[in-house]
Length: 439
Ligand code: UTP
Image: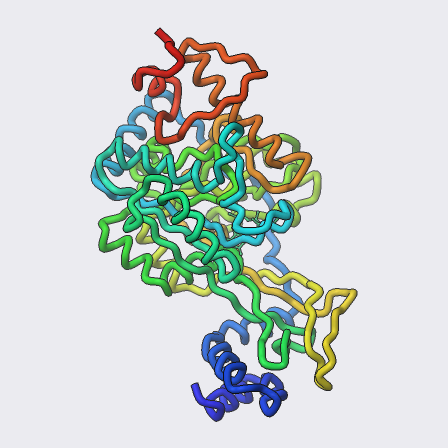
């Protein structure tokens, strides 16, 4: 893009001020600024400005809990067999969103590189990747692993995988792709400059996954590999049962667009999304922050963001504009006169897309209840609830239960860790000849 083209597009969109400091910039800064302008989707900026001008928040809905199924033994077995068949045919991919900033944990580097192993101190990525190693070995077909990173953590994420030999996965089946960034606006709807030659941008939220998948050719890559179902999860939960055949199988048997695993909330006001029936009969996710305590108490189940998407549905949704959510934030900027301003009150609006906003478009949805103790203990905070300490305890308790069921009682004082590539449950531990002289 040339200077003239940049000026034209900026002025046409009421953002001519972006080139205010052009004369002061050196050649490299000029090139970088032009590249930034070229990358901006001004149709999206126009949507942001409309949202800002309307002052609208999320559409009002009357929260009504959606039904949640607890599969019977028979259904579970049937679904498990169907899921195994999908894995055997190489039709399942795994999608991890790991582009977050992990600000609450306060860890330098990608959250996935955080050492969570109770004995080994191995990173969260290890516990995810090793489950895929097991699936690949068990079903004899690659399970491609798509990992969404961010501009800030992409290089460090790749470096973590390389340093650990991809945790035993084939590098050709580990596909990194970067989440998009987009600008923030001030109260007048103007782009903010964080440097005289740089527009302030921030990640577009986990809903940006769809755009990023499409833009980086991942949806085409999935189609070329014969993928039909995509298992989606978040980086901070090492208990997650990746591509659980029963879940994938139920999704496929029901012909669902989207399936969600839901668990019982610990308390009525626990901070989890709630799946609600909308007025048109479809389902929608309501954020905990949008519910009054009384409304929240009506929802017994919450969503830990463990989903299966059908690839066809992802493709359809990637072509649509997702709703925007805005947050009023403090954003340091360069003022008109060149002064650098560090505001002490929110002065700008950041915009985000949320992946669960595709839910109302899904024609068939499966809401499957799961046992929280087995599959969910996220690392969100540095200390207290949902911290590394509570997560390690949950991991060890789960493995201790497996060992007990396999006939080995391990006292709570003994630190414990099981390689997820080795087994996923007591039966498999036993079948694999177990360790520790079990016989
Ligand atoms: P969280 O909402 O817990 O955010 O992300 P976070 O960035 O990990 O942590 P905080 O809020 O800053 O403390 C849930 C999941 O969504 C991913 C995260 O990596 C995590 O797996 N995510 C979040 C993205 O991939 N991109 C985003 O822009 C935001």
